[in-house]
Length: 282
Image (cartoon, rainbow, N blue to C red; front, side, top):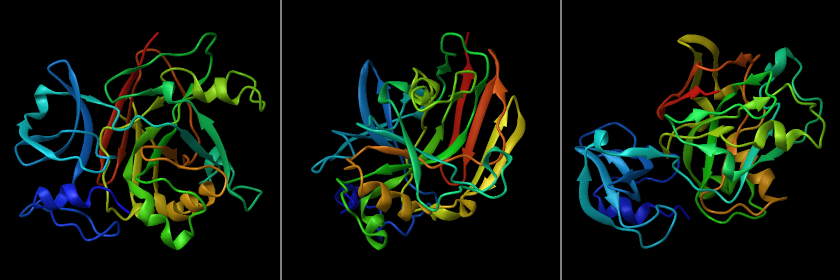
């Protein structure tokens, strides 16, 4: 079951299960969980009144407690909010991705892997891989797993979801896009920006997602337009792959995408979560 119920109780937060947003008493903002560097050490915590509330361990582990220390947000460096063992991407999960209105030809889930080493945090640079000629953004909602999940029924998938965050499934479309090139095209270093926060309890299948390139809106959709729902994705994947706490699933991108160039700034905003911001380096 959802591991953070105990911590929420210790922090005097109300917790009503994965389908209900958690809120600080007297504050209607959802909890935002994050990982950060402070004074040379890496910590986990959550953003609330007064700043970042520090935890004595990972929010994916049982027994984690509050340290009692609250740190001003401007005093920390935000890191990717999870260090997953697996990074999975869902392909063709919006009917209009790539300009195709018909959606996936198969009724089954299509998925691929990126590498944990490709993850970077908000504020970090996306570095084009060697020979890059056509590096695309792909703004996405990302599912974060809370507990080991194997052969999970669709109606039980909520029990294995910690929350959602924001991702950019950066893709080098200048490489040949054969089965043997997908990992290079999607899993090279810095090609999985992630963060800044994980937020539980949102209505995951009806959130607004907006991508901006140098301030211009280039993608705008609602996650209600996904072909496969969050619960369907988690359930189906768990029948092939054992999902572990902290694993992340990029849920697909809408519409057409275009190339980025060095110096570009890409911002992806997900309703209720925040904004993931990265620039493209050389």
